[in-house]
Length: 187
Image (cartoon, rainbow, N blue to C red; front, side):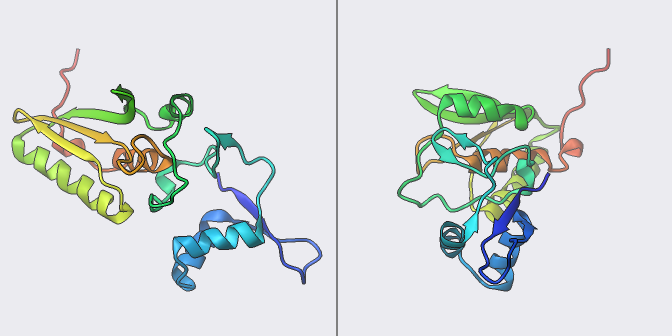
């Protein structure tokens, strides 16, 4: 599902509707806008649909849109805060097989795999690293023993979870990992 927005253009009697993803892409690539410039444009010139929901005290574009279609945003904003546990519990179902964990008051996403070999574990890390680099958001990677892989995702800069963590988890879910994983015994 694509979120539709209305652009406020004085020369038009009825503002056109455009796909948010395509607008963001055009602003970032075709026009060379930074994320800060894009945010400024949205604050000053874009009217958002009234169906936009509030989550954990923050407005977000996340509705039924797939997280894997989104892009992580820089987390250096001074007003960025970790989401509440209630909000995280609402979103966890959108990243299958990930678990929500609370470590000493810090919420994190966690997922584990059993890989075929030590080298397959390192290959899994390489695939995850490519996604993490492209998103500018980096998880904690653990290879314990020779075949137990665990990934923890949380936004270190805010000390908890943000939407970026769910985006990265969804993108990791989309990686072709089956050839790296041990097969479960058939019953």
